Length: 540
Image (cartoon, rainbow, N blue to C red; front, side, top):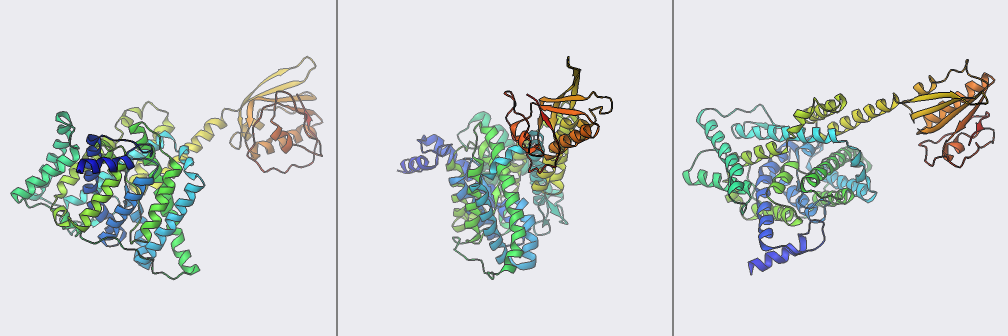
């Protein structure tokens, strides 16, 4: 009966693409056990991030359950795990400290609405603008952040101040307690490394946690446990309308936080979606993930949760444990709720060393070690972006790091294209001089474009051929117009050839539209351009 029930549940949430399909009982077992492993790892993370945000542990746990369940069921990447994260918590702390937790709930609701709108208007597609070097830097930086966050477990419980990236001011373990902690971490890591060589019937991280916990409990070893962080006992999350005044002042308070939270949440979620998609070899739906994150956070705000987004560490645990479908993510959320409602005494006995061992293995598996060897092989600009995004992620947060990486990559690309502008010159039998422009003409290359022409020495008729170029923006149009004006002032005639009809329309002067030619290219120009009076001649 249990097997039939499990198979029935698998039919509903199993298909990797979200389409219902059959799943074998053995695969369903793997998905459920993978979810259990993730749920165990979620507990200390959710509690720690709740401390970062300055709220009660249950606020973080409820967020992990609600966000995790909704995104698992309707998200754009089956098998991806979402929950309360440190990247969001470090933004929330100042809002909670200044205005209280009710304003946080209101901000989370607004955050969800903004993310929902981003999904409806299909803004998730812009994640494709993130280049590969930024992705490498993101992965490496987040792996380092996950590693630093585990260091708080090597401090005396209650003495450390938890931050977004690690610890601050705590008293470190020493002597026998430190040796025991290190030994148990090493044991967990050894089990995770060795078990797959023997069997894949049980996810290795789950076996590592179970064996280490069993040894600690049976022998009564005195090491920090989950219960030393905080109690995870509680009831079902209850519907709760944020108790804030519905005024413009409230909106001005929560709107900046909601906008930042929405942006950070979507960036981290979409990058994680792409990363998990590369690992499992399947594409995910970016706009669908935006909608799922929006729905999840809107609901979370009305049930006393702190909001969340995709979690790369837990997603890696799930993928490495065999989780590939929506069943694993949904199971993780349901197990987490069971821990809160019924199994908190047992969960609180799990040694933190076991969970640290799991996360250390995640760090080892997440860090792009090959990026260290390719730094000297790739272009210097790409190597700089990888290092810059990695360092910025560790020192600040993911959103800033990605924005910095994209900006640097875009500027590098613009500079590389700016120096590509050049021209071949020759004379026609009639004595006209032809400039055959090569390379894109845009804001970055207009200065080089202008320097190509020798107006005083040119003959009375000049032809500028754009067959091997492309006019991209208003700066380019302005440069062409300025060039035409200079030739006109010098008493010389200029003809422009192979410009798109869009350019013809934008460059018309004194009511004269440039003559179309049969082989003019078709493309648009990014400009809202108003031309001045003058005369241009068209070519064909």
